[in-house]
Image 1 (spheres, rainbow, N blue to C red):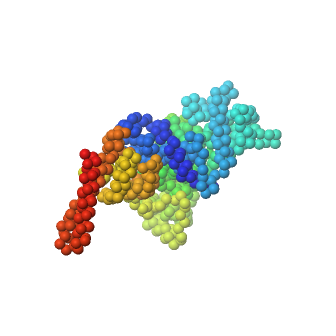
Image 2 (cartoon, rainbow, N blue to C red):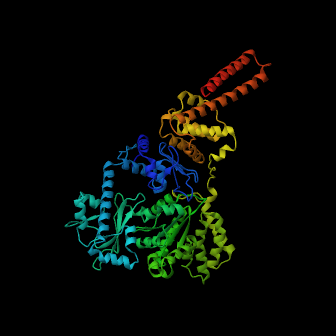
Image 3 (cartoon, rainbow, N blue to C red):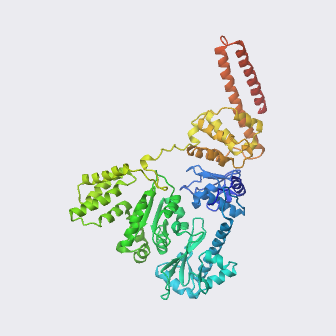
Amino acid sequence: MAGRISRTDIDEVRQRTNIADIIGQHVTLKSAGIGSLKGLCPFHDERSPSFHVRPQLGYYHCFGCGEGGDVFTFLQKMDHVSFSEAVEQMAARIGYTLHYEDGGPDRRAQGQRVRILQANEAAQAWFAAQLNTPDAEIARAELTRRDFDREAAAHFSIGYAPKGWSGLHDHLRQQGFSDQELIEAGLLSQGQRGVYDRFRGRLIWPIVDVTSRTIGFGARRLFDDDQGPKYLNTPETPVYHKAKVLYGLDLAKRAIAKKRQVVIVEGYTDVMACHLAGLDTAVATCGTAFGAGHIEVIRRILSDDASKPAEVIFTFDPDEAGQKAALRAFADEQRFVAQTYVALAPDGLDPSDLRMKRGDQAVRSMIDAKVPLFEFAMRQVIARFDLNTVEGRVQALHQAAPMVAQMRNRSLRPGYARVLAGLVGVDPDEAMRAVRAVGSRASQQPERAHELQPPAEDQAPAAQPEVHVRDLARGSAQALREIQLAEVLLQSPDLCEPALRERVQQLPVNEHRLREVLTALFSDADYAGDTNRIERVIEQLPAHLRPLAGELAMTDLPVGTGAEAAAYARDLLTRYVIDRVTQRARELLGRLSRESASAPPEQVRNVQRMLVELETERRALQDSIA
């Protein structure tokens, strides 16, 4: 098991990476003043750019939707990878060797993964080139028959594996790959007479992960004398695990995240048909049933948000196998914080055949006509029984009632109990009693929560609303000055003399949310020299205050750089100290006037001495900015 990446390496990779270069691959950035870039936010629709990037700080923030973070956060959200994967991706980009704590990964395994990925990339390029050769006429004819043109083939990087036994092997050996590496990649098979190409005489679909790396292949039989299966996939390898692989995810991931919808189809051509028909959220499993591993991948992209439930739409064949697949999907439905549906094509057609026979609109209409997965699964269960008999109706009711009782959204249970009553042909009260009886028995048993199962809606903890700069100002001059103070200290603390910064740290901050931000900043004694201070501050803050810290770190200061900026920072901090000193002096004067008659002489002298010290400090500060 891989250990954690060392914090030193994380900071080093972040510092060596130009965040503007990475974000610039996805967003057109333009200058927005000294040290600031601006563009249209990739995380929400907008017409006027509110997405800011500060390369010197290594941070981005959108003032429209509140998204913000460093380069790793950006990669996590755009490519839907884990934090560790984002760090590893950037380390590989700059050629930096990471070190791991708590054991760390197997170095041989790391090298093996790299070679497999390199072999797959080389194989993909070779397959794509073979599609244009005279021998691939049968492959091109099959694509044409399925109504896929050259542009579609190029978009999905489709290739062709010639019938020969060693074409790919010979090519990759010339590229420097060993037989063992190619066997480990699943590109070669081992026979009694030696190694040979695994894929021969087939159409090839590369299977690409969310980080745009080719991890395997799917291949369709083309020739009648091919005795192999109709579809042949890459076997399990160190980079390809079919239980967690979804074909088309690399093309669909951004649309899935943006539209909060995913369409699960059953084959490679179905994915192509959906995308070409305008359903760019379609993905497919690769030679295995849809299961928990796929759910984990999809949930990471959709991101659980009970306030904005996503849609997971399954397409199943209407035959017995399709019905079984639907019931398996329903068994896993509780793992989603999403609304689940089933879309069935007319006449038992799959999306690819439907598009061929009836066009793109028919594919879109199939998805529009989706029905809730729960209702579909309940109908499948009830259909097993003879509802013309009392015994059949009772059995159907007892089989379907637990499905209603287990619904995550309790508010829907009464309504579906009535649906159940209508489908079975019993009184609604009888159906409701059956549902309640199941729920009563379940409540008497220890609850077993699945590790992926989200909390019920009525049990979800209430999140505190996000805090933004606009929530703090409210026309208060004091709040505005504290906001400006936090902006300078977060963005450019090195512009201020250490003694002045230290004096500011000793003074109170009235706005409690700003106080939390500055407390997190000051927790690092060397925050002025810490190039990763923004990330450290945000890590320490509760979720509802992170947008506030991001805005404070990204708001453009009203000056440029150099002497002008230093003068602005010095003036701002000095005036803040003067204000606080003056306020403290007023408080002491009031105390002196109230207590001078009754307080002990020594206490009065102490107050007078503090007043003199404060006045001396105030004058000195005033002279420094005069």
